[in-house]
Length: 342
Image (cartoon, rainbow, N blue to C red; front, side, top):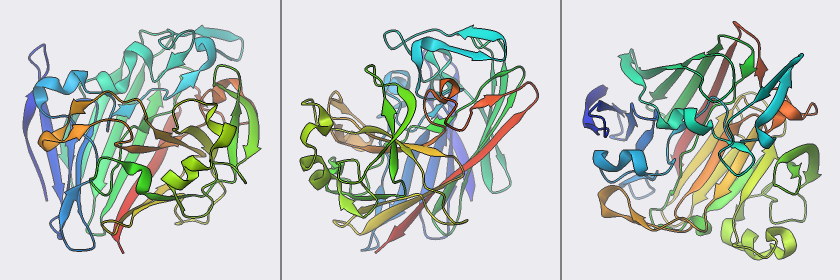
């Protein structure tokens, strides 16, 4: 069953609708038109209790100022070195919003746009006409479909059509906390990736790969995040212990997950499936303290991101699968988060 109501208004007065998708177990997912945000994912634990496993905004009045949690990021997620790339003989210079680099769509970030949502059958579909203002040189027609079923699977189907030659790499920036404790370091994590991306002095992928074996980035077996961090040594370069790691996913059999996140405390797990070639693992040790949904206080390590997509900066790295789409081409991709108890 899917219902809708008004979540709040933006500063300019526009209404933001909220869609609630419920299954037969009493579990539900809430999607907002602003940012195509995954606002709530309320699922069972091993004791039969319901809990919200994604971070979100306290109220509609604050939504524009509340980080990227749950937002769809596009048209190109993550970084492009110095905002520069070429397609054929054409050179592109994008707006740079992270020092000298482009990040998460810059001023055109999909997570900062008001999408138009509707109910289509068993899904919620959100549409956006992406008018370029940051240097891509063309517009994009974007559509995201959310479906939540009785098997506790939240499917995200992306469909982006290029109205010119461009780069397409959407993702979702949901922060997950399966236990509800506000500290994800006691979660166990498995990632089906034996290699991570090598990066230059600015942290931008440079086209190389590094085996994860024997490092804090090795999640090829189910491993406690906190214990992996303790193993870090020089991996974290003496800074705050955290992950902002880019994985090249191993080739998986059809229907097999690429990651598995589990909280032993409550017996709740989440498997990730995708047809994309890479995944970003992100934890935030320096998140500013703020109040989220239901009065929950948020701070460092309060959530973990598993962002599927192309490798960041792949447009400048021929060794990685290309995110370039020519005029009239459509990117279609699916990521599924499947929740379970054990």
